[in-house]
Structure formats: C-alpha cells, structure tokens
Image 1 (cartoon, helix red, strand yellow):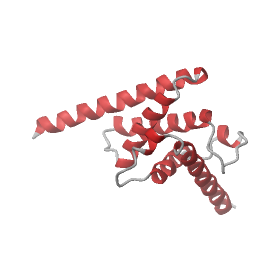
Image 2 (image 1 turned 90 degrees about the horizontal axis):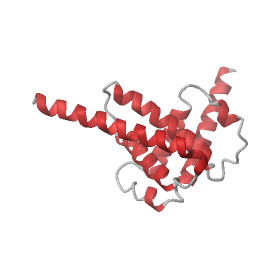
Image 3 (image 1 turned 90 degrees about the vertical axis):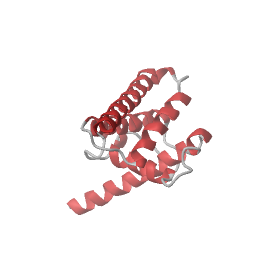
Length: 150
C-alpha cells in the first residue's frame, strides 16, 4: 500500500511541476532566465519537489485544479513561498545553492514583480521579496568571509 501511495504522490508532484511550467511559460521575462544549462522544466519540477518535501500538501489536494492547464496564481504564490522558505533555511545553514535553486529565487523575484497589481497577494509578495533579499544578503556575507580567509 505504501508503494502505491508513493507512486500516486510522485504522479501528483509531476502534475504540479507541469502545471507550474505552463504558468511560467506565459512570461517572457521568466523564459529569458533559462538560456543556461538548467532548463525551466528542471526548475518547475524542483519547486514541485520542495512543495512535496514534507508529504502531500493539504491546501493543494483540497483545491480542484486541472493540471493540464497553468496553475492558478494563488497556488503558484504558495508554491514559490514554500520553495523560497526552504531555500532560505538551506542558505542560513551555510549550505551552497545549486544553479536550479538560485534560479528558483530569481524566478520568484521576477514572478512576484509581475504580479504586484494583485491586491489579495500583497503580503505574500512582500514576504517572498524579503526572503529573496535576505538570501542574497547571507550569500554576500558568506562570500566575503571566504574571500577574506584567502
């Protein structure tokens, strides 16, 4: 039974990654971020994996959504927020980020800047921007410490 539950969860995670991808593809600014080695599918799937890192989120399973369509903006906000929070924890533990994790932060910043006119999500926007700023401040301090040690 556990195998089937794990399989279903992987399926849902893949659906979420695809639905996030469809949402992000509507933005030319976001698509311009993916000219390097890491593609947008990898980043969308990593966001989905981070969202599912502690099991299947109730807020996502209770929401009826066709995963063949772009994910609703409210749900994208939640996914981005969870991803940014987990990346912040990783950075605060002085663990280096890989390229995909850095792209999640950059993508999040670009995405929330595009959604500023959405009044219902202004608190989430500010929280995501604060996390983005703090992660890069911690990263800058870490780099300067390493540079000074040489």
